[in-house]
Length: 122
Image 1: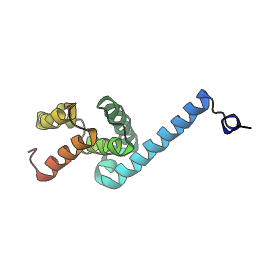
Image 2: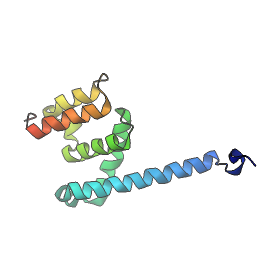
Image 3: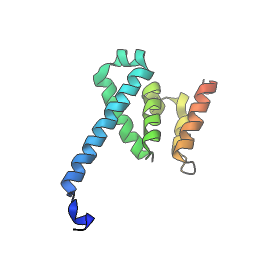
Protein backbone atom coordinates (compact mmCIF):
# COMPACT_ATOMS: atom_id res chain seq x y z
CA UNK A 1 0.00 0.00 0.00
CA UNK A 2 1.36 3.45 -0.93
CA UNK A 3 2.00 5.96 1.80
CA UNK A 4 -0.50 8.39 0.28
CA UNK A 5 -3.22 5.75 0.66
CA UNK A 6 -2.38 5.06 4.30
CA UNK A 7 -3.30 8.48 5.64
CA UNK A 8 -6.07 10.62 4.31
CA UNK A 9 -6.98 13.84 6.03
CA UNK A 10 -10.29 15.35 5.03
CA UNK A 11 -10.77 19.09 4.61
CA UNK A 12 -12.96 19.00 7.73
CA UNK A 13 -10.14 17.38 9.72
CA UNK A 14 -7.64 19.94 8.38
CA UNK A 15 -10.00 22.69 9.53
CA UNK A 16 -10.24 21.17 13.00
CA UNK A 17 -6.46 20.87 13.25
CA UNK A 18 -6.05 24.49 12.14
CA UNK A 19 -8.62 25.65 14.69
CA UNK A 20 -6.79 23.80 17.47
CA UNK A 21 -3.47 25.34 16.42
CA UNK A 22 -5.04 28.82 16.41
CA UNK A 23 -6.48 28.20 19.88
CA UNK A 24 -3.09 27.09 21.19
CA UNK A 25 -1.38 30.12 19.64
CA UNK A 26 -3.99 32.43 21.18
CA UNK A 27 -3.41 30.85 24.61
CA UNK A 28 0.36 31.14 24.22
CA UNK A 29 0.06 34.82 23.30
CA UNK A 30 -2.11 35.47 26.35
CA UNK A 31 0.44 33.76 28.61
CA UNK A 32 3.24 35.80 27.02
CA UNK A 33 1.32 39.06 27.54
CA UNK A 34 0.59 38.13 31.16
CA UNK A 35 4.33 37.58 31.74
CA UNK A 36 5.53 40.59 29.74
CA UNK A 37 2.93 43.14 30.88
CA UNK A 38 1.83 41.95 34.34
CA UNK A 39 0.44 45.31 35.49
CA UNK A 40 -1.49 45.92 32.28
CA UNK A 41 -2.76 42.34 32.27
CA UNK A 42 -4.01 42.68 35.85
CA UNK A 43 -5.63 46.03 35.08
CA UNK A 44 -7.31 44.86 31.86
CA UNK A 45 -8.13 41.37 33.06
CA UNK A 46 -8.18 38.13 31.09
CA UNK A 47 -11.33 38.88 29.08
CA UNK A 48 -10.19 42.27 27.77
CA UNK A 49 -6.69 40.88 27.21
CA UNK A 50 -8.12 38.03 25.14
CA UNK A 51 -10.02 40.62 23.10
CA UNK A 52 -6.75 42.50 22.51
CA UNK A 53 -5.24 39.27 21.23
CA UNK A 54 -8.17 38.65 18.86
CA UNK A 55 -8.02 42.21 17.50
CA UNK A 56 -4.22 42.06 17.32
CA UNK A 57 -4.35 38.80 15.36
CA UNK A 58 -6.84 40.29 12.90
CA UNK A 59 -4.79 43.48 12.50
CA UNK A 60 -1.59 41.48 12.04
CA UNK A 61 -3.17 39.60 9.13
CA UNK A 62 -4.38 42.87 7.58
CA UNK A 63 -0.84 44.28 7.84
CA UNK A 64 0.74 41.24 6.22
CA UNK A 65 2.41 39.56 9.18
CA UNK A 66 2.53 35.82 8.53
CA UNK A 67 5.17 34.18 10.71
CA UNK A 68 4.23 33.27 14.26
CA UNK A 69 7.19 35.31 15.50
CA UNK A 70 6.12 38.49 13.68
CA UNK A 71 2.47 38.03 14.63
CA UNK A 72 3.45 37.57 18.28
CA UNK A 73 5.69 40.63 18.20
CA UNK A 74 2.94 42.71 16.63
CA UNK A 75 0.34 41.56 19.16
CA UNK A 76 2.75 42.44 22.00
CA UNK A 77 3.35 45.88 20.46
CA UNK A 78 -0.39 46.43 20.10
CA UNK A 79 -1.04 45.25 23.65
CA UNK A 80 1.68 47.50 25.04
CA UNK A 81 0.54 50.63 23.21
CA UNK A 82 -3.16 49.84 23.10
CA UNK A 83 -5.50 51.51 20.65
CA UNK A 84 -3.17 54.53 20.65
CA UNK A 85 -1.09 52.64 18.10
CA UNK A 86 -3.90 53.17 15.57
CA UNK A 87 -5.58 56.29 16.92
CA UNK A 88 -3.08 58.64 18.55
CA UNK A 89 -1.21 61.30 16.56
CA UNK A 90 1.77 60.40 18.75
CA UNK A 91 2.16 57.11 16.87
CA UNK A 92 1.51 58.32 13.32
CA UNK A 93 5.14 57.50 12.56
CA UNK A 94 4.54 53.87 13.59
CA UNK A 95 1.46 53.64 11.37
CA UNK A 96 3.55 54.99 8.49
CA UNK A 97 6.11 52.24 9.05
CA UNK A 98 3.40 49.56 9.26
CA UNK A 99 1.85 50.82 6.01
CA UNK A 100 5.15 50.84 4.09
CA UNK A 101 4.80 47.92 1.66
CA UNK A 102 8.46 48.18 0.65
CA UNK A 103 9.58 47.00 4.11
CA UNK A 104 9.66 43.37 5.21
CA UNK A 105 7.21 42.65 8.06
CA UNK A 106 9.91 41.78 10.60
CA UNK A 107 11.93 44.88 9.69
CA UNK A 108 8.86 47.07 10.28
CA UNK A 109 8.64 45.76 13.84
CA UNK A 110 12.40 46.16 14.34
CA UNK A 111 12.20 49.83 13.31
CA UNK A 112 9.23 50.55 15.54
CA UNK A 113 10.76 48.79 18.55
CA UNK A 114 14.09 50.56 18.06
CA UNK A 115 12.40 53.93 17.94
CA UNK A 116 10.31 53.17 21.02
CA UNK A 117 13.42 51.97 22.88
CA UNK A 118 15.28 55.21 22.16
CA UNK A 119 12.33 57.37 23.23
CA UNK A 120 12.12 59.12 19.86
CA UNK A 121 8.33 58.79 19.82
CA UNK A 122 7.81 61.40 22.53
